Image 1 (cartoon, rainbow, N blue to C red):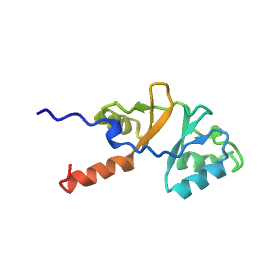
Image 2 (image 1 turned 180 degrees about the vertical axis):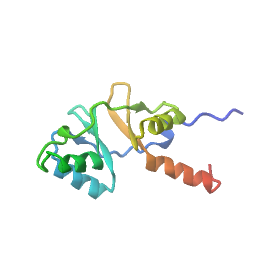
Image 3 (image 1 turned 180 degrees about the horizontal axis):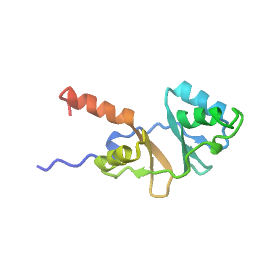
Length: 134
């Protein structure tokens, strides 16, 4: 019997913290601290991904000209690489490695956010595999 190729759906986190582009840098940092995460997707009113922001983006902005009251849209990355649930997991991992990302938003066919695949998700898989539980 052939083994099926794991997909992003098999590894992703479905409970996602996403924020609107109008949230302030300070509010975004608070969200990250509360959720103990380092990045999250930025969405519009219809929950379409319009950006992604990391703690490095936020802190880098504050080290420059940004103020804590500025919207995260001033520091977020707008050219977001996304994947779908059906994307083979190895292709998503290659994107993470090639682009030096730590997270990929997962969207449905209409671009609506449905999850995130992060380096933490992949480390959990690696941990289980290294323990002999693949």
